[in-house]
Image (cartoon, rainbow, N blue to C red; front, top):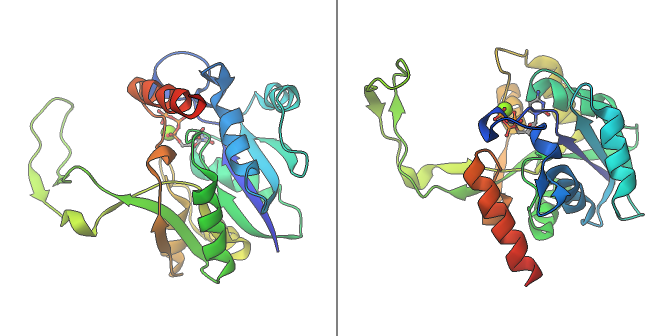
Length: 237
Ligand code: CTP
Ligand code: MG
């Protein structure tokens, strides 16, 4: 039962502000992508890591993987990415060898996910769930609004019951055939799907949630870099 991790890392990181592509920016001196690759390879179940690099950055990413110490029991592949996350994941899936039966999809932008969370997702897939997402309850109440022009007040349409909501993280784990079918059947619409499990839901296949972890948060805005470096400093203390 071979498991691969596909790491979409081809985004620009617009919300983080100007600079290198987000996955290549340093976190306590090491590129965010390298942290994310190590987080996947830390699981003894992961035998292959496929990094989906910025479209013109595959050679640079290959060099980064060569330069940094990574577990030797794991294989590493680099493929160029696409214009949307959905397309980037699809390109990563297309590079998987035949003998992979389970796939994790993990954002390069979640560099600090603990290995116990990775293993819990893999275990749920091995126990027979076609799609597994780690997720946490929300701290904030959420409102659905009618989006307006930036800065304008927006009418509220409703308030879902917070206790029933979960904020989803990665790695998301899948039976390989289920995820490939989802990517083949869900067209890229606008910015594309932001979540692979959502595509599996559109197929009508069951998706389950397992407990996520606070340290699996996504580095999206500048303040997230401050938090990520604080987490790393605490781990090293
Ligand atoms: N991603 C990708 N290919 C794209 C867009 C995003 O592989 N065309 C990846 C990102 O590199 C990231 C993950 O998808 O690891 C989650 O996306 P997000 O946090 O939105 O990252 P960015 O798209 O880079 O950031 P932003 O939306 O702020 O530009
Ligand atoms: Mg994005």
